[in-house]
Image (cartoon, helix red, strand yellow):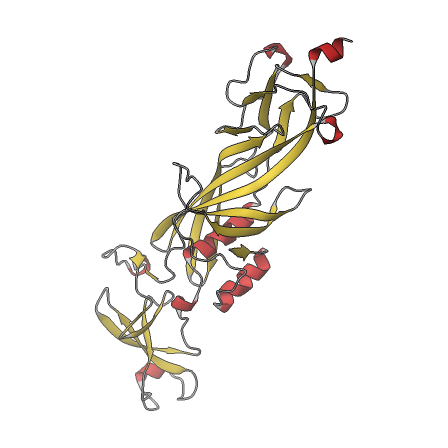
Length: 319
């Protein structure tokens, strides 16, 4: 597994073109990204970890993580070239290495042109260098001058890694838990009575949708995130999956069960530590990204919040 750390470390690695352990690796089939370290106050994730789903673990029929994408791509729209459309390209060929910024394969001219040659653009030999720039889409070979070697996009970030920068900007966080019975020693639920669960005051950061754009290494990616489901671990060994934010409980509902996200306890919490059930709500996000002539999906899991609730036997309360 690999970690995706804080944004400033990620951005440093991207701009340096170094695919180190703090970066998201190319995702494999049936992989997922989980939060390994979470800020307990804000509910945001500090460290995401990309892991492979074991073969023995059932794989959801929902969206799949589609991988990292390719770092090198062609997009000729700025030159009013639409055929072929934006698409990935090999990062190297017999013509050199690919540069997204120049939209061509780069190769140092050897030997360099003599002084006064138009390719120097008024510069003297030794002041920068002249490069061949071959664009296979237009079958065009030109010479360019550059003060520094043009970027090698094959050593830069993948679209997924740039999408992760956009995700960092979203400040996704765990939901605020809404539940009845309410947490607190003076609030006691009853065995056999419906329990309602919901995301309290959901917004774009806790439930989505939310969109952000990021750029690095000549790649611009727009990502949109939304919660796919909230998994509730009820503390009694039961897990409830809710595909919506849930419905907030009102006293007027009485003993009705929740229409979309509920549970019923069959035993009291008296035998649990502290005499309470620990209820944990874990958000599972789906992020779709597009850019660099490509698109993909990232699955994020593990943003969670917990509360303690008390459930008692009715006859005990009567006495």
